[in-house]
Image 1 (cartoon, rainbow, N blue to C red):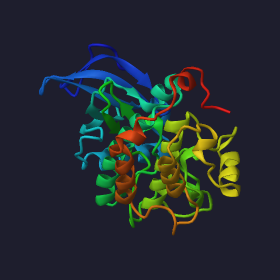
Image 2 (cartoon, rainbow, N blue to C red):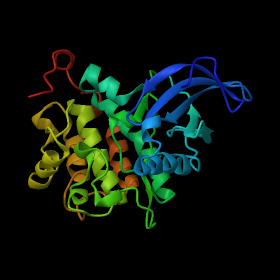
Image 3 (cartoon, rainbow, N blue to C red):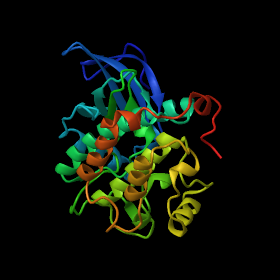
Length: 295
């Protein structure tokens, strides 16, 4: 049991509780050596003997530790307390993008493009390291009041071409609403499967909803396999045609049509973002306040 004012590894003084995730508890702490605030993620007792979750936790620490990018949460340390693994990363006071979307439902085209450009910078960087994220979604993105964006959670990430398997027992791993259809078919994760997730993320940011949702991941998978991603303009008609085209290209089932890499997708979004006449159209205030982005 970790309490306020406890000192972990003679270095980290616990200041409070940030939150409780599915398999870990997160604490705010003070690094007594570097005099900075940090976040400490500690795996829960009930998961210590769960090999699959333990592997994910260790995988996040291993992969994140080698990353250094302004749009990615920094990992400072990794260790154990009372046989419980913990990860120390930078403390971010910002909300997650999930919190923002739950409140605003849909964001303007300008704000959406700004977010996507920053996330794509992070994805371009990790892809250059041969890392496939596999879990791109609003819950794993921190969004600051200044518009800054940081990607987190590399628990199920993999190195392209490696034999390491974070997908035990051939289960579909990830969040169903953002998974590429080829993953539901048993295909291997790839840079292009990350691209598909980015397209679904873009869709949600500008419409306030995901294209496919259901009670179970399996039902989402069926919808994903049997249908093409609909036009976001069906739910938010004011979305510029150029953004619609980017979303539909990035979420195409046909890998020959889908963006080959994140740089290509970023280039197209940057064109839209730099077109002030186009980007300032946005969504009407009336639509955003009264939730007309939903059918």
